[in-house]
Image (cartoon, rainbow, N blue to C red):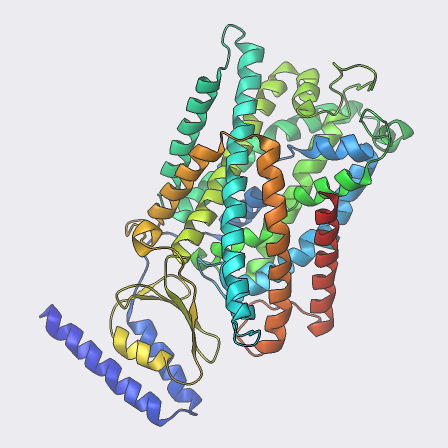
Length: 517
C-alpha cells in the first residue's frame, strides 16, 4: 500500500514537471512547482530557536561575558576602553551584523558563511582555471581550521578559572598536567552531550548561562553604585594605560577591542533552525550587541570601585592584569569573587558549546555533495542517494528524481561543495536533527589541540580568519551585483553606496588588525 502511494506521488510529480517544462516563462507555474515541492517534505521535527534564544546565542558567540577586557585596559586605560566600547559597535559590530542578517536570511542553511563565498565567487574563472571554486574551497578549509583552533582556546581558559578557584579555596589540591588534561576531556564530553540534543536545548542553555555570567557583575555594580563617585570614571588616573611602559599601545588596544566583538558570522549556520520570520534577524543581532555592551561596561564600572594603585616597577602587581576582574570583585565582597570564578568558567563553556554547534553543522554541510540554486534564488541542499533538503532543513522524501529534473532546468546551478566523505559527518540524528558526526570529529580535534598553549592557538585563529573575513565582506558586495533580485527576507537599506561603505569600513579594520599581528 505504501509503495503504491509513493508511486502515485511520483506520478503526480512527473505530471507537474511536464507542465513546468511546457510553460517555462509562466511565473504561476513556477509558483505551483514550489508549492508541490513543499508538499513533499518530511518536516524536521526538531525544536527550533526562538527569537530570544537566538539573541542569547549571538551574545554567547560574540562575547559571553566581559572576560578579556583587562587586555584592552592594559593597552589603552579605562577611559579609552569605555569610549572604545561605544565606538566599536558602530564601526564594526553593526556593519557586520547588517551583512550577516542579509546573507543569513538570503541563504539559511547549515552551510552558513561557506555558501556565502561559494555562491558569490563560484562563476569566476582565470582563463581555464576555475578560480572561483578555488576561493570557495580555500574559504571552507580556512573557516574550518580557524574555528577548529579557536574552540580549544575556551577549554584552556575554563581550566585556568577552575585552577584559580581550586588554588584559592582548596589549597591542599594542586593541578598536574594530567589532572588538567583529564578535566578538559571531561568538559569535551559534556559539551558533546549537550550538542547532540536539539538546537532549542542549546538555546535555552545559553539563556541560563548568560544569567550566571552577567549576574555577579550586575550585583557588584549596583552594590557599589550608592557610594560610587561617577566623576572618577573618567578622571586623569583612569586615562593612563596599565602596562610596564605606562605608554599607550594603540595596536594591541584596537586589535583587542575588535577581537572582543567577533563571531557575528557564525550565526549564519543557525538560521535554518529559527522559528520566527527571517526578516527580523537584525533585531536579534541588535539584542546581542546590547547584551555585549552591558556585560563589558557594567563589569568595568563595578571594578572601578576598588582602589587599584598600579606600580609598573613591581612584578607582583595585578592591577588590571589578566584575571583582575576576580581580584576586584573579591575586593567588593568575597562571595562575588567566587561568583566571578564560576562566571568565568560558565562563559567559556558557553562559547565552547555554541561554537561546537556551528562547527558541527559546517562539517555536515561540507559532507553534502552539492547545493542547488534555482533561477529565482531558492536554494536546496543535495545529499547522497537522491536526498534533498530545503532552506529549513526539511528533507524532500518523495519525487526526488522529478525534483532534480526541475532543478536542472531554467539556468539553475549545482554548486559543488562536498569535500568530506559522507560517512564521516554527513548524517544527522533523526530524533534531534543534530549533526552527531561533526560533534564527534570536533571533539576529537579539541582533545588534541588543548595540548597547545593559548597564544599559539589565538594567533593561528586570527591569521586564518583575517582572509576569510575579507572574502565574506566581498561576497556580500558581489551578490548585490550578480543577484540583485534574489529573495532577501532582510535587506540592508541604503542601496549600493551603503553596501560599499560598510564593506570598505570592515576591510580597512581587518587589514589593520592583520598588520598588527
